[in-house]
Image 1 (cartoon, chains in turn red, purple):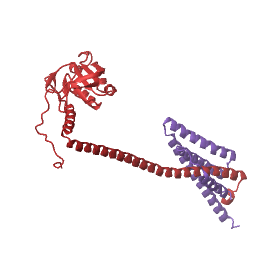
Image 2 (image 1 turned 180 degrees about the horizontal axis):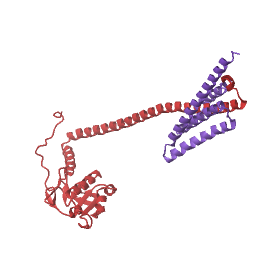
Image 3 (image 1 turned 90 degrees about the vertical axis):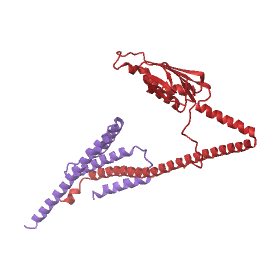
Image 4 (image 1 turned 90 degrees about the horizontal axis):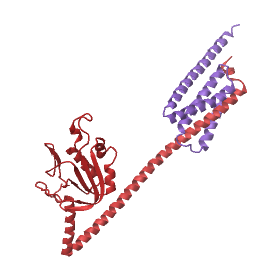
Length: 250
Length: 125
């Protein structure tokens, strides 16, 4: 039997081959077609991303424009007040008050929280480790303070010591000192800020308080409607830092 | 001309769908690719069976659709289970296709050699 005769067979062979090839061809057609469409939509998606970037930039531009207008109005206000000396003094006074609050030179009040931290009820020998594991250290307080600032605290006092830029919490000879004043447990933080935000930020899973509670430290967190925070006892002195005016700055 | 008709059918099927097919849902691409591979495997298997003179259209057509379904199902469940059964199907079918093509080539070559030998033997009475 030769190759030519070899290919001749029953009609059924041809028929079933034709059916199968038709289906296979259709499937390949679908696949190629959709691959082509996918390529097209890829381009569409990139265009979409660019459009959204453009929209975002436009929104930012609008926002900046508004900010410029606001500042212009402020400048106009200042210029107007310059004409009126007493108005100028009032503005300066307002400005000064803001700076004094920021520096902790004025007592401040407002809603906030009180956070009391005490040493652990666990004793050395209860579990592995020494007693130093179960007392509050300076770095614990630093970390809590950091979490408070991060949660939007506007004013913080630790055992009556106002925390300001430059306040250091240190430890020497097993005594904790803040603003160069020695303090001891229990440690009481008074904080002014958004109560809900502060509480939820401090209670965050695996946060500082969570870790302290695991080791059975005494942690008392109470939101308060009115917190009064004293001013800093010794205002910071600036010996080296000097103001730099616009022209001098590089 | 038995081989021409199936080829024409292949082209017709391709063009008909390519021209007029609506967009396929995304995510079906892998399954259609698997189905194509399974279908191609069945096709090559059919040709081989024909050459070995043990072709049966019932076995061929049912095998074509059943293999396709099984391949798609395997890929689908692999996808659901997070196992790349898709790859297993591709490898298995790929090996089968190559084996079958090799057999087909071997069969055709054997026939040609036999043909030539027969022709060479014939002229001398």
